[in-house]
Length: 109
Image (cartoon, rainbow, N blue to C red; front, side, top):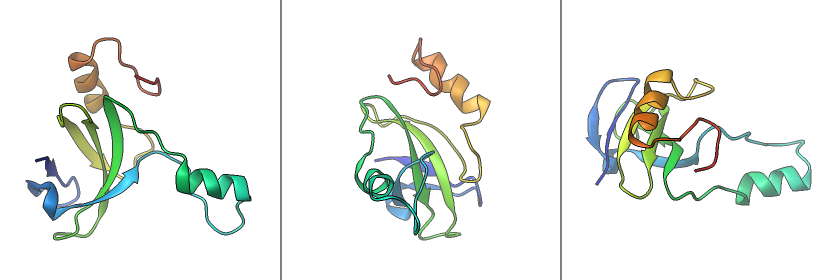
């Protein structure tokens, strides 16, 4: 079971208190998108073995969206941060790099 900490209200809880919202840091398309852009938005997702950045919502708490960095193999959570952030904070990137030598932000694992 994952233990996540909501960066908005500070509550740490099991994943059942939160709702997963898919991949983080992707361009989300709506009306006006081409058929190809909207298809990719709906169906083209990474499913990595290793570090992954996800959107979560504190469903049974403050209701706010945030991002989490975790390993899909070990379920280790490296940290959570505001959904308003365009890229993971340096502290989280450093934590990942310390446990996964050779890992860099933006590079496939």
